[in-house]
Length: 151
Image (cartoon, rainbow, N blue to C red; front, side):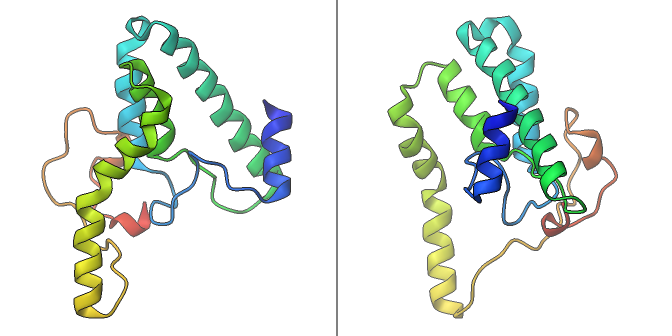
C-alpha cells in the first residue's frame, strides 16, 4: 500500500477519496461517516475488512504525502472514501456509487448553477455554522466558530 501511495503521489495523479477544494484541513463529513462505520463494526460483515484496508490506505497516503510534500497541510480523506464504504456495507452495487453521489448532489448543483448564473460569480461556502454542536461531533468541532473555508 505504501509503495502504491508514493507512486500515485509522485506521478501527480489525483487520489479519489482524498483532498477537498474547500475543506483543506479535513472534511468533517468524512469524519462523521468514518465514526458511523466504526460503530457498525463487525455488523459490516465483509465491509469490516474493507474499512480496515481503507484505514491502512489513509495512513499510507498521509505518510507518503508528508514525506513528499513537507510543510504542506496533510492530504486528508474526503467524504467519498467513507461514503463508498457505507454504500458497499449496505449492499449497493459498485456501479451504483457514482449515480448515488450525483443524485445526492443534484439539488445543490442546480441551486448553485442558478445562483451563479444570476449573480455572475462562483459560489463558495463561506458561512460559519452557529447551531448546537451534535453530541457525536469530532472534538475539533467543539467550540469552533471557524468557517468551512478554515477547516
